[in-house]
Amino acid sequence: MSNCPKCSSEALVETPALGNIPLDVCPGCSGIWFDKGELEALLKQSQGWDSADFSLINSMPEGLICPRCKNKMSRGGLVNPLLVVDKCEACGGLWLDPHELELVKKLLGLSGGPSEVKVDRPAPVPEAPPVRDVKTVLIKVVSGVCAILGLIGVSAELYLYFSPAASVAHAPSVGLSVASVMFFIGGVFALNWED
Image 1 (spheres, rainbow, N blue to C red):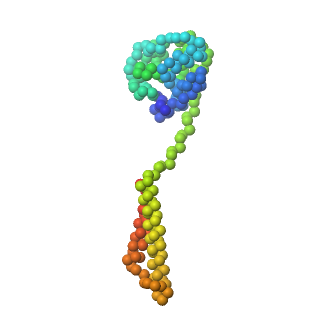
Image 2: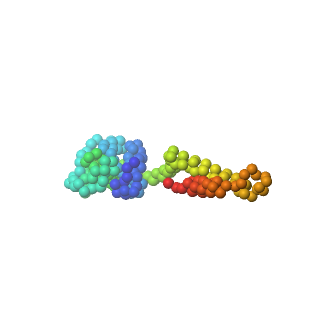
Image 3: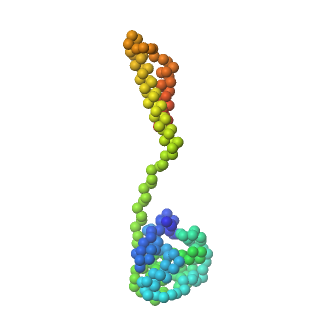
């Protein structure tokens, strides 16, 4: 998708609104981008027009940036020196501001047919959810297992500590209690860690 050479933040929208030729129109300024040969095809289709010279008159290399090949376009007269447009000499594309198509047709002695197109901005494409790599998923799984094992260890040690001595086979261990707490805390922190 190409951006408008005038409104750089606007993406050109392809539409067959003029003579069923897929032209690119800016939803912001309504300018039209014609790839090489498209203006001639449009005039031939809608007006029965045969040919004209679309070389720029008094061409100056100080125009806009071409939306197709990103080269600097030349600025000059089209059909008449007073109708100043931007044309890319590299790819042959032509940029017409709003209402300039009507002026081209008048200068060529043509009438009728559509001369202006309005398009809506395309709906924004929703962003895809981030893809997690295998390493991150594995770290989260191991962290969850550590947190669960730590919780089980702490629970077992608390059970041994609060149970009567005659009802349990062995006494609670300080080392096992500390290790269980460390596993639990480490697992919880690792689960909540953001990349």
